[in-house]
Length: 221
Image (cartoon, rainbow, N blue to C red; front, top):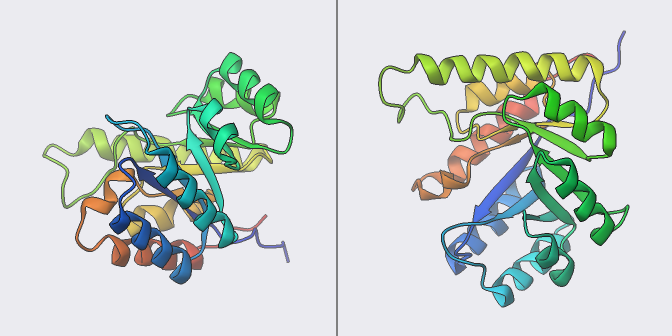
């Protein structure tokens, strides 16, 4: 019998401003679900560095990796575990040179096979596939064909990637538990709900549902 891959885990995004409420929600999510990584994301306003520094300490103390989106210098200054960047080879090389070989550097690849392969070949620790915005049947405006097509393209990419490459892949901006389970079953190593999920009053319940769904999904290695 083929070995089963390790179960898919959560990768959470948290956008500035990093409020006390968001900090408490992240702490609760880490306590109650299988969170592998938290990404501190850019927004219209810059990070409060003292708050970001405290949040990094909180996340790392829980045994969870904490990355910074795009800002390599800030990641180095605050002692983050790495960065999440656009799929750009020069930016990757700059990040690796500054942060070192042990840093976790991942790339957002959208639906682009070429960029994903290129970044994996030069050493990226993971690639992320998925829509720029979250897909949700409850909130998507009709017609939903384009959104469904995007999810299907993401599913095709994850299936292809998991059959060929050992570099982990993330299903990006997936807020629907059923879609998360589908992508985990096809080979996604992580599922990343969108950074806007925290705007929902039931954010923690949705994240718990996604965690449960992807935790049950299994794929033969």
